Length: 429
Picture (cartoon, rainbow, N blue to C red):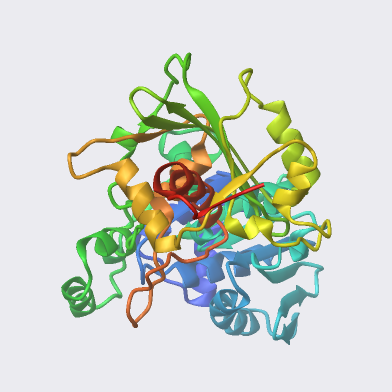
C-alpha cells in the first residue's frame, strides 16, 4: 500500500515541478485521503498522461512498492513513459535504473520499488504480481475482463489501489465504476472533467476542435460525457426504449440460441425469446466469455435448454468450417451431439440492416428488446458497436474490437436467419 497524504503529494509536486490544474488537484486530494478506487473521466488534452506520470513517480518513493501502468497497447503506455522517465531521472539522480526494451519498460529504485509498463493486448503479462498501485490508462478502451480477470486480483494481496484515467466510451464497465464513486460508495471516488478544465490548453485549439467535430464526438471526447459512441452502428438504440428490467410472462414464446464461437477470442451465446403472435423478440440471456471449448458451449446450451426445446440454434455460416480444436466443424460437432445448428448466408451489411429494422422500422415500431439484468454485455455492445475511426472513408463494416463485435455477431446471425433468409440460401445440418 502506498502511504500518502495531501501534504506529501503537494511537496512532491513542488519537487518535480508539477502544477496540477483544479481537476487534477481534486483527484490528488482524493488519492491523498486514501480513497482506493479513483475513476477520472476526462476529455482529450485534459492532462491524463502527465497526471498518470506524476502519480507513478510519487508511488516510486515508497519502499518495496510494485506499480503498474497499464494501457491498451505498448505504444499508448509509451506516452506515459516519455513523461515519467525524465521526471524520475531528474528527481532521483543515481537512485534509479531503467530498462527500455521495445515491449519491456520498467524502473527500479535503490530502495526496492519497481514500476512496469504493461499492455492490455497481452493479458498473460498481467499475471503473477501483487500490486500496491495500478494506473489504468484509457481504461474504457479495454474489455472489462482485463480488469476483473487479470488486474483486480493483483491488488488483493497488498490491498493495492487503482486509478482509472480515461476518456469515456459509452455506458460500459467504466461507466459502472464511475457511478459507484459518483454515488459515494465507500472507497470509490469519481470525477468527470472536460478538456476545458485544463487552463494550459489554448482556447483557439478547443474552438478549432469544435468547428471540425460533430456534436456526438464533441460531447464524448471533449466534454467527457457518457454518450453512445460516435460512429455507432445501431444509432437508433435507446436504453429507455429498448431495455427492460423485468421479463414479461413468456408463456407461448419460443426460445432460440445464437452462438458466435471463439476460443482465444470470446464466445458469445445469446438466448432470444420470440412471440409468434406479436413477432417481438427479447434477448433474455447471454454468455460472453473467452476460453470456451465446444464442450463448454454444449454444456451451457443444455443447462439452459427450455422445457419445450429450442426453436432455432443459429450460428455463422463459417461454423461449417473445420475447427483446429476438434478437427471437425462447429456445426458438425454439435450435430453429432444432438444440437442441429442452422445458418444463413447473408452479408454483414445486409445483416446489420436486418437488425436495424428490428430495433426500429419506418413505422417507428420496435420489435427487438433486451432484458438489461440478463444481458448487460449485449446492451453495452449495442451502444458501443462502432465503425472504425480514421481519416479515410467510413468502412461499410463495423470494427472488430474483440469486445462488442461477438454478441453483435450472434444477434445478427439470429435476425438474419429468422427474418432475412430466402429459399435456397440457408445452411442446415
